[in-house]
Image (cartoon, rainbow, N blue to C red):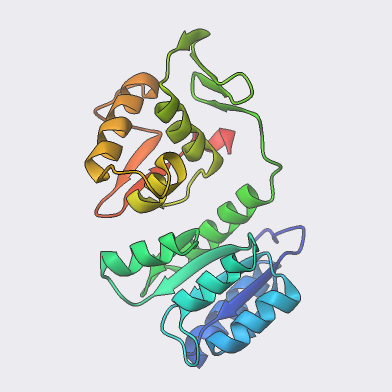
Length: 235
């Protein structure tokens, strides 16, 4: 199996010793440098001191729960990639974690192969310099020019449609809750609801998707929001 490179640091914050050991062994086998913590307080201290590239964060932790750890990491201005590990199946728990700044989540029990793939994809995205021009399929989004073209033809976007597409292309593969989309594109004081976001997504799909009824770029995540997935070769 090919080793991951360059060596990146992963912090695993998990209070189940068996789970912690299994995750540590698998990530080390892939070539990651692995740090561990068994409670939220130790996890937060490690993040602030070691500045890991990725945090695997269990939500139900002693001392400080995972939600609060996530909130405090973002409060410190750190953009460390965070994947939540949760045994809860409630959509509201996932949405809360995403709104607090987590980048992705997996629900226990999960496939270690899936988790490793998500971690690698997230690290690949977060470590790339932010682009000004994005290409996906036959579309090109030019941020400085505020212009979208499809097959070389300009596609007109309203300011909010442009803002929504910009948010999507800057966070490929990330599960975005409707609340986060609302705050990022419309602002915290906006008086619009989730149906407004859904209508804008539908309009955007009609402009960029090869078949809007079977979208390949903007995917719906039931009860949560949306995820933008560019073609694999363009990641």
